[in-house]
Length: 116
Image (cartoon, rainbow, N blue to C red; front, side, top):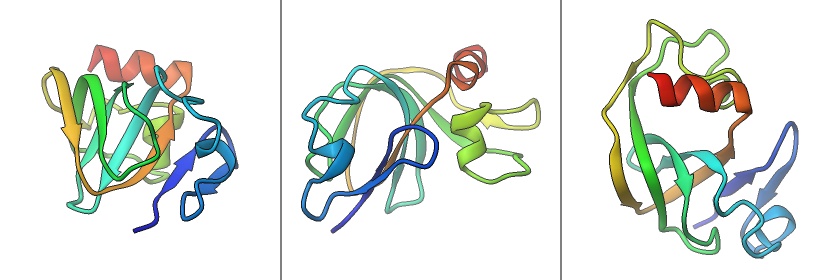
C-alpha cells in the first residue's frame, strides 16, 4: 500500500519507493502530526516512529471525532480544530495501523489541538 507524507505547504511524498520527505530518515519524527488511516481515523499527536511502514506510533494522541472545517481535512493541520469540532481525550501513546497519510501541523494548529 502507498501512503503520503505531507511535510509543509505543497510538499508531498508518496512512499512507494520511500522517496522525498520519507527518505530523510526521521525527518518528521518528533513533530506534531495528523495521521489518517484506511479505517477513516483521524489522529493528532507527536510522531514517535519511522514513516517507513504502514504502522506508526503517536504520543499524547487525540482523535478527531468530528471536525467542522470549511476547507477540509488539511485545515486541521493548518489552523487546527475549531469550536464546532469534537476532539477526543488524550491517549498517552497509540499505535496506528494501515496509515494512509501523515500531515505535519503548523504551530497555530498544534496550539488548538492541545487546547481542545
